[in-house]
Each structure stands twice: as C-alpha cells, then as structure tokens.
Image 1 (cartoon, rainbow, N blue to C red):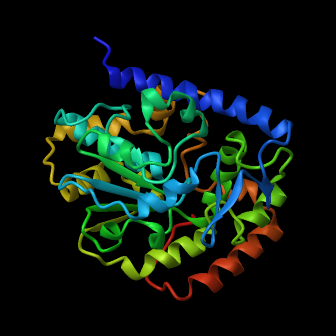
Image 2 (image 1 turned 180 degrees about the vertical axis):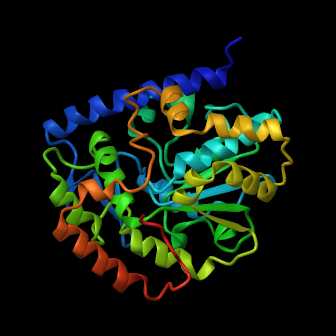
Length: 321
C-alpha cells in the first residue's frame, strides 16, 4: 500500500521539475531580480542567497530554532560536496532497522531551503515556507540538512549539542559539479558560461559564499566530540568502511548482510537509477572531473588560490587525485 509519505516524495520530485519550468518563465519576463548572475539574489548578512530556494525569513527563523530531539542528526555540507551520498547512506542505515524508508523524504528536512513552488502547495506541505513548522512536523529520526556556513546554523548545532555529520569534497570537483546543477536549477542567469562561473565560484559573490569561506567557518569547530567529519573522496573509495563508521557514530549496529545492503543501495549507479536518469541532483559521482574541465590557466589559478587560503587549515587534507 502506498503511504502518504511516498505520495509526498513523488509529488515533490515533480514539483522540482515544474519549478524549473516556472522559473524559466519568470526569468524570461524579468520578474525575478538578479545580481552577480544569481537569480533571485538577496543578502542574508554577508551571505549571497536566492529567493528561489531560500525564503528570506526562514534563514533567520532557523537560526533561532531550538526544538531539537535526542535522535536528531544534522548533515552539513557545502552544496555539491557529498550531500546526497551522505544522506543516502544514513537513510539506508536507518531503513535496515525500520526507522526510515530508502529514498523517502518523510524524515529529512532542510534547515534553510524550501523550493519556491512549494508555496503553491502550502496546505499539503507547509503552512508557511518561512516557518520552522516543517521541522517540528518532520518524522523522527530527523535528518536536518544544511549548506549554510557554521556561523549561520542554529546555536545548539554550533555548540555541539546535536549529533552532526559533516562531509567535504575537493574544491575543484565541487566547482565542476556545481556548474551543471545550478544552471539546470536556474539559480544562475541563462547563458552563464563555464569561464564566468569559474570566476564567480572562486569569489565571495558565489551562491551562499565561497567554499573556502565555508571551510574556514567550520575549521575551528572540527574537533567537537559530537561531530563526524568525512570526505566525499574517501567515501567513494571505501564505502563499506564508511558505512560502518557512520553506523557506529549514530549508534546503530549492522550485520554483515546489512552493511552489504547499505553499500549496494548507495553506489552512484543505483542512486542515479532510483532518482531518474535526468535528475539534476546527480552528475558524475566521481572524483577528478576537474582534470577534463579546467584549462591550464584555471588550474594554475585554483592551485595558487587553494594554497594561499588553506595555509591556515594545515590539518585539512582534501584529495585531488
């Protein structure tokens, strides 16, 4: 029997596709403000955001949120730095114990994002896209997902009072993965070339700020006892080991068969197949894409930029090979 949660997940997928078409129409008629190439641009403090995915008042409201539960798990990443791989593994682990369903959204909620089209379905999904009521209504055990820098998160997460998994990815591949995703999502104006996006990505005018600034914001908190730090590259190299590591961190004991099941469900091929061939969330699911995307000049710039900006984070090692 199909559950209401399954119906909501199915409809949300179609809302995503409909949003793309809807936003193209709005952009065409000049109904959405743009700045630095970002459609729906506005500033939340010093953070460039987009009204297409960030209801302005929600950003401030989520920061004041304090209604956390003992089994909550925060999942933090910069956009396109391993979000869905991390969430998928956690969700599959929960599913082995009947705590959640694979590919279901009934226990997953973003702290700061609500697609603009959800406003049309307020009676079905939410009473107000600027409200945190969705978080309170979300089924346990909740996955509270965010791309925000550390300083913008709710204080209990910042203070280590909420169990948190943080995933990182090498900066060059994040740039390569961000470009097709954000253009497909119409977060940037039409005709934005890779060269223009490259310059934007390495600036503070980038959507939600630069990745370097995001990492610098997280770095002083990296050793909190309630925080598990992962990297996308290490996860895809040793998914089996990371399934075990994540399960141990969240306090779930898996059998060998359950480990194999979680690994199988979260290979890139299976995730892309279950989400649909053309789903914008999934790109290539591997490391090293930057080698065929960056020009020699772009790679030289990125190397110098990374070297200069990473010097104050000496124990953070991101893999580029």
